[in-house]
Amino acid sequence: MTSPPESPRESPRNSVHVFPDIEALSRAAAQHIVSHMDRVLSEADRYTLALAGGSTPRRLYELLTGVYSGDLPWKQVHVFWGDERFVPHDDPNSNVRLARETLLDHVDIPEGNVHPIPTETEPTAEAAARAYAATLQRAFDSPASTFDAALLGVGSDGHTASLFPPLDRTDAPSDPSAPEAWAKASQAPPEASPRTRVTCTLPVLNGARQALVLASGSRKQEALHRVLADPDPSLPAAQIQPRSQLSWFLDAAAQPPGLSAS
Ligand code: 6PG
Image (cartoon, rainbow, N blue to C red; front, side):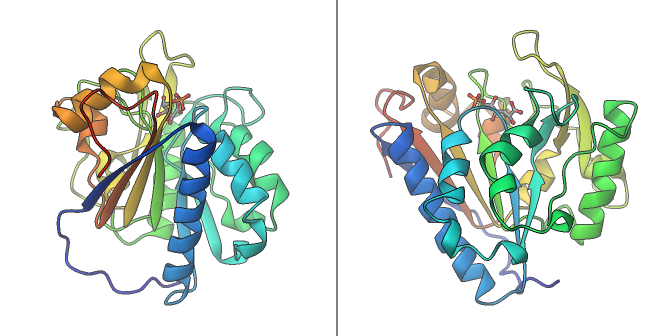
C-alpha cells in the first residue's frame, strides 16, 4: 500500500466555508471528500480516512453511503478514527457505532480496511491507546505523515477529537517508536460524558494531508471565535495544522459574528 510522495511541509491552505444549515454543510463536505479521494487514488492505491465522532458528522456519513456511495472505491479506502469514547462498540456513545450505523454497514468496505480503536478487547483506555498506536504504526511510517484526510469536530470548549484544553504542549514524544507519539488516553470534562477517551495525538492529526473540521449550531460560536477570529493557542482546535489543507465547514448558526467565509 503506497501513497504518492509528499511535498515538503508548508503551512496549510486554510479555508472557511459557511452554509445555511447542516444539510448543505454535509453535502459540501461529502463532495469535498469524494473529490479528494478521486485525486489521491489517481496516483495511489489506498486512501486513508480518519473519522470524527460526536453528532455533527452523522448526515455527512449518511450522504457518503447514499448519494455518493456509487462513486467511492471502498475497497481502496482504509478507515480509522481520530478518537473514541472508552465504551463497547455497541454503546450508543460509541463513535464506531455511529460510523457503522450511518456508513460502514452500508458500503462494500472490506472489514480488514476498518481500524477501530479497540475499546472492547483492552482492559483500560491506556491499553487501548497502546494497541491503537500499534495499528497506526503498521499503517503509517511516521506520526508526521498519516491520513489522507482527517474529519474533525470542535467542542464548545475548543476541544477537537478527544484533546481537551488546556493543550498539554508536552503531550506527544517525538520518538515515533513510542506508542504515546501516536495515541493516548484522555479524560473529558464532566459535561462531555463519557469521560474516559482514547485519542490520536495532535501530531498524528496534523500529520494528515488535509483536515476537514465540521461545526454546526450556535453553541460552537464562541469556540470558533477563539479558534478562527482571535486564536487562543491553549485550545486544541486552534492547533489543527494538517500538512497541506485545512477546511472549516460551518453552518450559519456556528459562524462567529464578524468572521467571513474565505
Ligand atoms: C467525540 C468527538 C468530539 C466531537 C466534538 C463535537 O468523540 O465527541 O471526537 O471531538 O467532534 O465534541 O461534537 P458534536 O459533533 O456532537 O457537537
